Image (cartoon, rainbow, N blue to C red; front, top):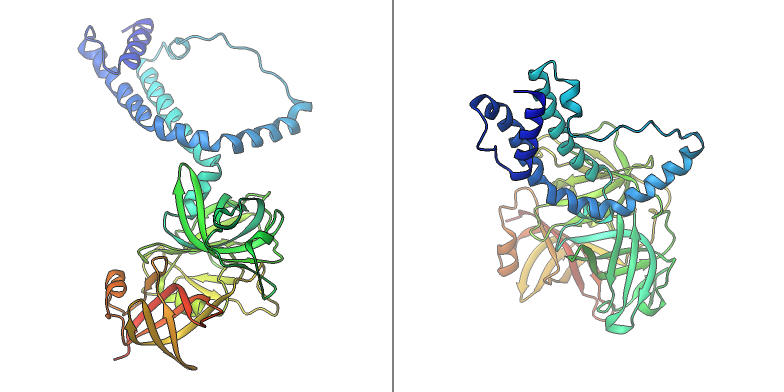
Length: 403
């Protein structure tokens, strides 16, 4: 098959999605591998285009910064006449090499499209890596805008991994230096820590806030860090927690760990290590932790250990409280928990996230719908109703039975 004939058949195959009927057996043998690779690239196109659109603002900003830095020394290359037969002319002397290079080029473009969309991941792409629908999450960031009043009050939170919308309508108040203030006092420029339930709709990630605390923070939303999914333990890994999230089914808990060097790690957390962290009367975000992998823990799940600090954790402090003890009984949605200080009453809600610890031998559904957890050890973190003194549970860790 001549080079021109090869190029013509390849163009027709790519246009129609099928090898032309007038090809010979040898021509078909050369064209079918090329068409298979092109079909794979076509299947990837919708996902690549969607990610590329989301990534466009970030990619454009990076490109503009690069152009500004390099414009003084930029040299335009000489123009190359366009033409579909360029590869054919270069490799005309070797038909096998022509075919191999054609397959490689088509595959390379498909691979580059996917890699580029991930490397220039936009705001929504990063948020999708960190937060899932119906997660309970604790997040730090800076308020950039507020709208509405009362039940329609909302705010925009700029975090390290993108902008989030906060629904504040059902929030009784915000905490500022141990004072409870009306949500109307929240304003652009406030550094906050937020706890609430995540929703996703139309490429927008929102949080229905359950607690908001205002205070000083070292968050820098203008500097977007590199997000890395931790799959293998890195020796000496330590940093500050900027996000804590628990999935609706309680089977997946994770944090985002800021190492302070421009990298942040998404760290899946082993259920066994959450008990001690949740028992503290403070949010997990803002605390400094080390990361390890304990013998017997599932691969890819890690143990977090809080680092003792001589100063308070970085960031604003949520008005969260923790109790640890054994469930004595349950009446409706209220748990009666025996703690070292005496019995405590805890309210479970639809937004409460339940994590099953080692040895519990229970399911989230059994705990939600019955008395299966009575007699089990628990660690609970949530907010205290100042009028009733009851603890409304945000996260409940359930351990082994004490009976």
